[in-house]
Amino acid sequence: MRRLVAEHRLHAADLVLPLFVKEGIDAPAPIASMPGQVQHTEASLRDAVADAARAGLGGVMLFGIPAERDATGSAGDDPDGILQRSLRTAREAVAAVEAETGRPGPVVMADTCLDEFTDHGHCGVLADDGTVDNDATLERYAATAVAQARAGAEVVSPSGMMDGQVAVIRDALDDAGFENVSILAYSAKYASAFYGPFRDAVDSALTGDRRTYQMDAANSREGLREADLDLAEGADMVMVKPAGTSLDVLRGVADRSDVPVAAYQVSGEYAMIEAAAANGWIDRRAAVLESVLAIRRAGADVVLTYWATEIAEWIK
Image 1: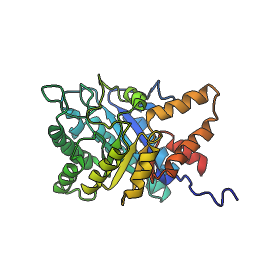
Image 2: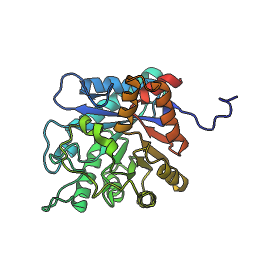
Image 3: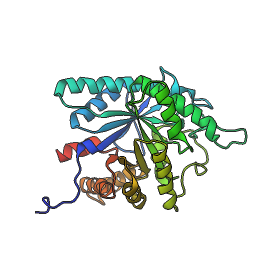
């Protein structure tokens, strides 16, 4: 009876697995602050994407970690850069499993930002005074999105919270002939303390913080307004991040959005549950499932979570 009348359920097709790929390593490198997660080689990425496809996941989100960085993040739109190579690898892995199983595989998504590629760790190009130059950054995002689409990304995901990023990327994709590449906009992205382990995962060079362009966690109405702006600019999906500390904003965005709504269960959320479970303080499986179900209950159609493949195995 409890199962029959449950209002929300988890399904593998609603889950997206974030994956990190690092240039110049010959074996997967464990991420200390995210137990169980690694920086992949291009070879191990292929296996991880294949596993995600066989598990029935809805998508994979790729983050590239280059061997060299510079002030403008030029590796981000390098046609042969680590992220573009990884996108091609992921598409090949998905196609192979689709041929093997006869079922559609996960959508291949790319993080469309510069923070992994800049030597200062910010999400954009810096002006002479050290602030992020919004408009100069938009030009880099447009070039990066087109490079990702050419490499096989089916969804590009601007995550830098620059004003006007969705409209600029949409125009660039359309002009380059990629009208069918979708945009998942990080619309309500808060400057959060829960991103710490992620910065370990991408070997971030950031000093300081991103509070001049990511949102204040005190503001919920602002999050709704940011989502409205991205919807007006043509976003195909909108995202709230971090998921667990923004459930009220997620509910508000879901109530007003006419496109699918995603939420990202971020690295700090993952690390807290893993740490508590490792100490025997909570039931790991139950806590993971409850945390993701709460995000779905709050209105997310799509959940990005590092447990995606594992959850899919649990719920089959």
